[in-house]
Length: 264
Image (cartoon, rainbow, N blue to C red; front, side):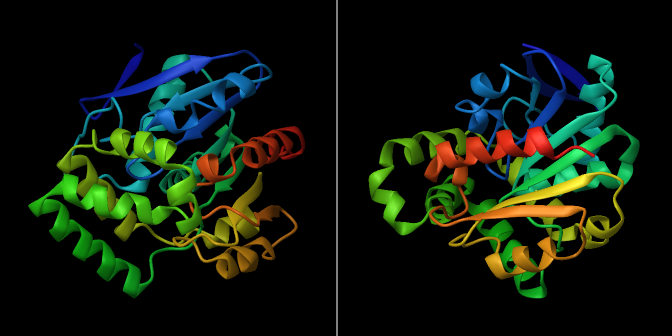
């Protein structure tokens, strides 16, 4: 399995397909496995780089706080090892925060960014308080935290119709270490707003979101989509926060469309 070194930690990735390079970034309590239904289709046209972010999947932790900038640095380390200069990035939730951090730090290396059920805004005061509460729960029992919190990312109707898929995703989440969970929660809590990037970035930014997302309020996404002509997006009617599972076909179609037209 391919790895690269970053801050003395092993960062795992996969590399499949040929063509324009596309980096897929998973969300919190996920791993590169979240894209396993998408990668075969996308790799027919593109070179797909699938990365386990620090503290998730097969990648190691390097500290007790993993900032979004540091996670973006791990992405840059993978691309440097592969000698890839310019990419499109697709980031789910936390992966979107990392994609924007990458775009902020390394704008010359970005062709386009897709914020997949994600946002450019920082945590609100209430959200930060919730992160702190989550950290205290994780310190006591990170597996109990995952078992309780993970299903809440899905719409209630899908918790019964997609039991097997949700169970598999939860089992993947349960492999995340306590340190990895806390480091990511701290990093997300501390991240700055990158809403100004939507206005001034030299690359296009596209949102794929859901009307019923319990994590990223759809009204805030709609507001961000209006910031500049450089920003586009689509709001799907059915999914909650986990569109790659709840609306797999629709999301794959939208990602393909983004990759076709989302490059300046």
